[in-house]
Amino acid sequence: MGIASATCIFRNVSRIVRGTMMRHPGIILILILCSSIACSLFAQADPASEPAVLAAAKVLPTVVNINTERVVRRTVRDPFEDFYAQFFGYNRVQPREIRQTLQSLGSGFIIDPAGYIITNQHVVERAADLKIHVTTNDGKTYNAHYITGDDKTDLAFIKIDAQTAFPFISLDDISPNLLGETVIVVGNAVGYGSSISRGVLSAVKRNVTVDNIEYKDLVQTDAAINPGNSGGPVIDLSGRLVGISSAKMAFTPQGVPTQGLGFAIPAEVVRDSVNRFKKIAQKQPKPAKQPAASESSVSNTERLFGMQLQDLNQELSDALGYAQGRGVLVTAVEPDSPADEAGIERGLVIYKVHKSDVNSVKQIEDLLGRVQSGTNVDFIVGVVRVGRQGRQLATLTMAAR
Image (tube, rainbow, N blue to C red; front, side, top):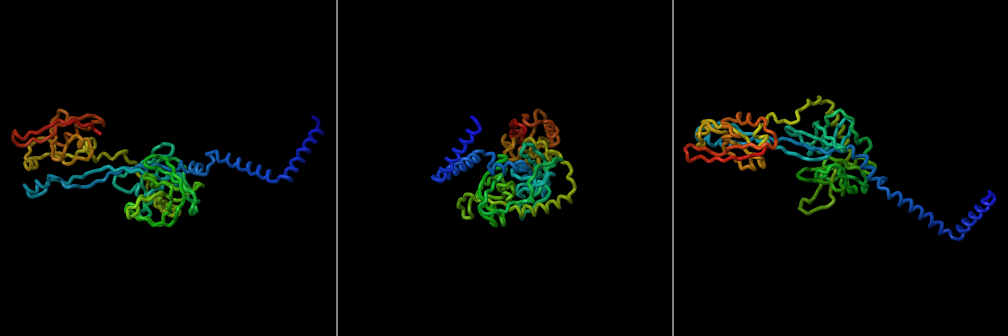
């Protein structure tokens, strides 16, 4: 086909299109609208381009799961103190210290490449022997230490013990927190790491009391906030911080069930607190490296089997009517421990471990010094009272925990 012929065809087509537009302008408008809708549907068909997906992908690397473990100690009165008071007129038995290990799960997010993390104070509340482990989105687990916190705002500052540059959320550009804007809750919901829920910003400046904790000036959302989300970020569709998940109201003070009442500490409060916390962190000396577990003050019998023991001296044996110079007294049993499950009770006496007679706590500690978790150990336990008729013994096998 020659150039002249092609030019002629083009002119004819142009004339037809112009004529159609003149006679039927509605058809052209419909075609344009259909084309626009088709393009829009095509764009929406790609989940990777959704604003919520992009915002979550931006923030997830900064979010951490927090696992805390702390040993709570309390001093209890020894059950045999009355015997000393009754028979000797004074107390000889020292108060016993009961230790209980408590664990909690929560969330947090990194706000500085050095590994500083902001979270809720109630997630990492300061206590004796507090141990903090954080797991980042890539599955790596690090030790962390507590720096400071504020009960009034329910915010706390911790730091990862590692010389690594971490991704972080910038607090220089926070969300304007507009009513009705879409928000995303990110966190360790009920132990499932990197969970996401979506909702809207329902209200601001809410004052609520949840679980006997009074909160002021919170933002409210209908996005699901579950146990474990505490301390995690609430973000907008640009990935900017809206606040920190803090509380969920499941019931009104009158006991009426509620739905969609979650609350977060607003971003401006978080930013102000972080500025204060950083100044405190700069003044603190670098923490000394701590051993992996603070077991040095915990006896082998308590660590492995959940029992606390005491030497059965002559005065105590006489007061209890037990045979003298034999065995070691059980003074406390931890609930749900191997000793508890085996049926050992406070007031019983351990006479043998494996096939060895024991007459002091030190002997038992030495015998159990190399016992590993899962090892079965035989204990001869019971009561041998003065006289032949008072002998009641049993062999109990316990697996070390």
